[in-house]
Image (cartoon, rainbow over all chains, first blue to last red; front, side, top):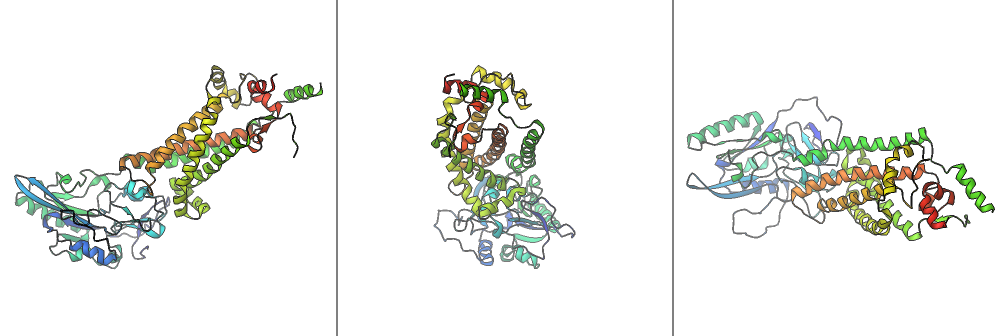
Length: 295
Length: 206
């Protein structure tokens, strides 16, 4: 549902401007991977607040549970064991929608108003307008949206847009016991991250840094990483994510070009008829056939 | 309804029905497909009972069109082999479009332009079938790169095909006496002599 208290910046499959008159503070969620203990309180809080209950599932011999995002699991902890600087490191990343400034899902979506980007940066799915085509999955550079098997609608983290609309922090941030999930204005979150990065560098993590990938215009979910030079270590977090050129081609220049070309063929045909006239059987040949018959 | 018994039979009932199955499914596919391609066409989904139904129905119509087209392809393939006369026809196609067909070479059942149309549509159909399977999420879950390529190819081949079919339909409207061949299968002898003299000779023995 559209939230009246949140201004809309972009709307899927809509070619006219959305609301622009107000200036809204850009918000962000900052996930400090170095402070995460992997307790999954955020997963539980997400399930509680959004009232979604995924299947309990099975143990796969690892901590990850559920094993992947789904229509009913909008955030999952991804646990990775790596060796860095001759030490075993247990990297735990809370995965979910990154709320890109340039969202591939919204670009690909063919249904007007099924995907909304609020002016505060949240990218929200409005399932009542979703047609279940899965183009958002095709467009997403982070492999986040999931199509429900029950209703064929796409689901993902809403950054608790309903809570944010009434000045509350997202449920996951509220539940985090170590302060690894911070929420506030994007500016404040960057400042906070800078302090964390300085601290990590002092502790010997030379490559610590903020993950706010510019290939998608920056994100409204950011990570503090101890190894910001190797985001791939964190369960395949992409180093330079951007909307695939194939998706840009498909939902970018191809749309107006093909539409104009087809309009050209249709109008060209009409005006050809009007200017050149119909191609009728010539009188001579009709006469020839008549003569044959008269014989 | 009695028509001239000397009219020439161009298509039998089964060929006509086959063509119409392809034609109807193509029109429905183009209308629903355009709706997913550009927001300007999105209201077309209302013709299918709403956008979600359009999304559900579109790929099944695609399967129907693919099957009907495959039958049609093998029916007409042998009549669409390119010959030197076709190439000559194509090199003079501009005169034809300008409305001057006096020095066009004699053509068989199909002229060079129709043959090019046949092969171009066959290539587009093949691309549509394969790329359509890649992006049919209700049944398949292909690798994301294949899905993205499928989306681009499906949109591009679809746009080209809609353009080709517009030309195909316009040609039938432009050349008077043609459309009846697809309604009830016959054309007049004068029509055949004018536009497909080689075929006229072959069927009349003149």
